[in-house]
Image (cartoon, rainbow over all chains, first blue to last red):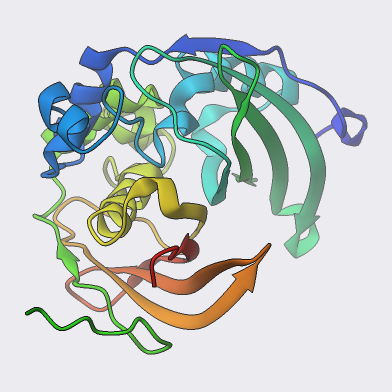
Length: 146
Length: 139
């Protein structure tokens, strides 16, 4: 059983620079065909200051700095038992290449189903930019198979 | 003159059909997304976890749904995007992403639509069921 006292625990904040090259790599990996996501000139022609950060990219901002491994240590869990149950994004403003995004996450709920065979960890995050403006809120439901 | 079709409940977005998931795509997505969980890229690890093989990151399939949404309306109009991962997307699965407007609503004076999202493989198995809220300021 995961320690229920970890509810309301705040994880260490992580900060990630939105690098152009990384955004282009992400666009390639998902087969993106809209040039505004990988061509600066196309992005500017469409009225953007630089390459936009696509809708789901910020999910990885925390993982990139080893967030998944740290979370597994905190929860005393084996990565092999982990599945992604749900993911939600609420958007407040666009982020672009060159922005520096900080993600602050809190564990907001831990519960189980099927007599403890499945445990669920809910993590809510706020992603802010270098001007401390709220870019997006994220909510993840992680599933642990026992 | 081009005619403008009003966006109402029942409107279907153009579907997005993806090629079958292969190991290369999973490896590229692991590096690009920052999710280095080996269960998606390391066969030995996946087998030790009781899985027959590596399988897709759920967030790869969600990113494809994101492409469907941003090819329909500019990303700046996206207000909310939710995915419930309902099944594992296996190697060889060819995913089709689709969306349908289910509701029109006004929030804080802004016209918005709610969409029902689905990612389904070639056998009709749902991998993601989700929703999105998109603002339509010019409608």
